Length: 333
Image (cartoon, rainbow, N blue to C red; front, side):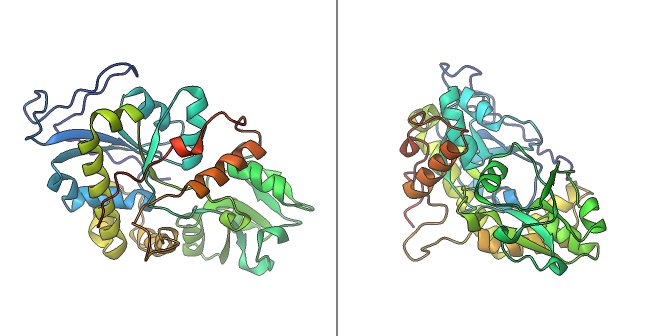
């Protein structure tokens, strides 16, 4: 697990803690922004800084936010950090969240909108040993499976797979049990645990949960609807710079990886380097000749909506999938 990386900048976007309060943009001298000075905003992560956030950090490292007239503070997340609630309430203007959390927030009056999805394919996987001979999720049988029993992908997986002879145990949060037992499988992110296990002499094989059709957008940049209405120019600049950051990170990750490693002694530079390789495929657009980087589709949001209903995490008609995302702020070129 990575320690938090704090980026402290002198400027703050002050937003109301209540959803009915106006946002107040501040500039370098603390006065209300006139539109000509750098605007300070905060970006709340959903987890500790990692390659899944690499493009957002790259936008900071390479000055893309600054070029757009923004001073961005990136706030690390962690277990239990309520990103969607914080963004929906106006405590922070921007956040990073999984698509399923965006959908689940709406019936709870925590309304946010996805602006851009750098990870087009879910990084969720089940890690098995190469020696097990298991090559697809439907072949999971006669193993111990460490998984969070209440997580949405876990519910979907357990509903769709026979799991004959599978003993489900709580996920420990690390790879130590996996290293000791070749009949042990566990949940993982493809850019993390398999690389850590391999570095410790194991031969892991990743079975992508997306192969079952459960493929929510990940690391989605979100804001609340009022932010889009009141400050569309700020939103457009944030989206534009973030896309620049992701494009740069995937092409040249080393400066950003060094930035992370210098501030986090628990980060293994080699794991970061290998993680970017895994990210290349996760960030691949399905139709790169027709789509802008980060673009989302209603079909994907609708499919996820229906899957959440299937696992009884969402009530039918509780939210309109068309309302939870927009491509309107993506750059035209």
